[in-house]
Amino acid sequence: MGVRRRIAAAAQRRRRARRLSGLLLHIIARGKIGRSPESELVERYLKRIAWPTRVTELGESGALPAPSPNSVSIALDERGASLSSTELARKLEGWRDGGKREARFLIGAADGHADAERASADLLLSFGAATWPHLLVRAMLAEQLFRATSILASHPYHRDG
Image 1 (cartoon, rainbow, N blue to C red):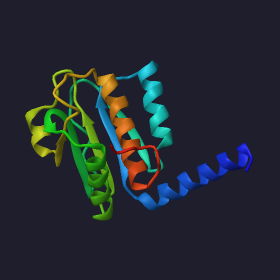
Image 2: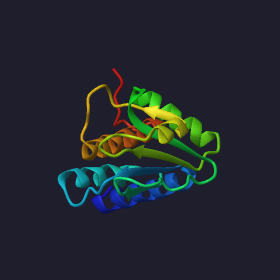
Image 3: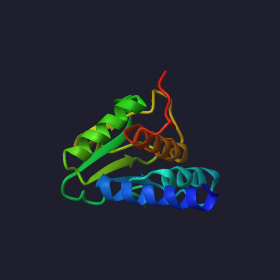
Image 4: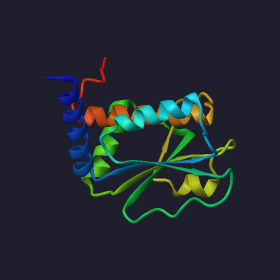
């Protein structure tokens, strides 16, 4: 098969998977990422995800946008659960199969989330005990979302072991 046909076939598979998924992966982050190597890395992973994705950037303070009906909120927080890639994939699968329409991944400002934001989250998710720069957290989250959706699609990107 020629290169153009492979690219077209891959694009068609991604479009079909987006229609079938039904779960929007929405990254809501405090602060602006601008044009940077980190933003390029985030975009690279988001483009590879077959599910619908969205990124919303907010100022350092102020209210979060209201969640849409039938959504789930995941706050990235150092006190949260540290899930393996497979465990994250199973969470996404459960939300998707349970009829959720949106998974909102919340990245806080430099001082993290307000107590009310943390309390209202359906899940607190941690990338370990280390403190990570917000720009890298976005890239790490985008990669983990790509990995999780790849696991659910039985794609060979992820290797357990």
